[in-house]
View 1 (cartoon, one colour):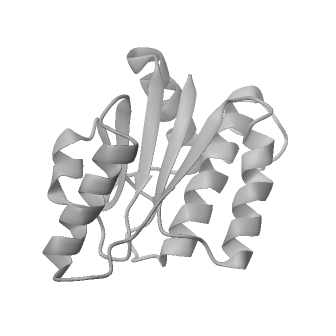
View 2 (cartoon, rainbow, N blue to C red):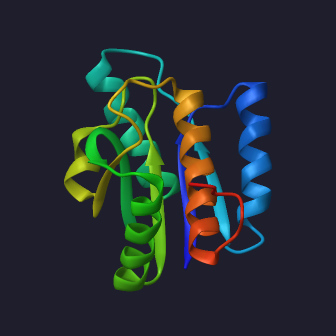
Length: 153
């Protein structure tokens, strides 16, 4: 199964380096594509979210199993996340599309179309932290599935 990570905005230099470190490790086991989309800067929050949704539809589309990162989503420990990720991959087949919204979040249409709403934390995370945490947890999930020593719990 291929993964696509759709991330709004650009990471800071620190976050970008961390992302690349874990993406390189993931790619040993799994094809993963990263798509960075522009964040909208003009107008109301609603208008920005609508513009970002339009950018997503134009550049990515709704093809694939949509996994939306949302603070109201399912919260899982790393081992449980690994098991659930593996289960859903087998169930859905094909491509999984993970979406991390902009500073304003995501247009409500993303939640409606999501196959899985996933929360990284009940706390609000900065965009940089959410990006790095998602990618690190995806790597950790693969390590758990493969019995690699990265995960020590």
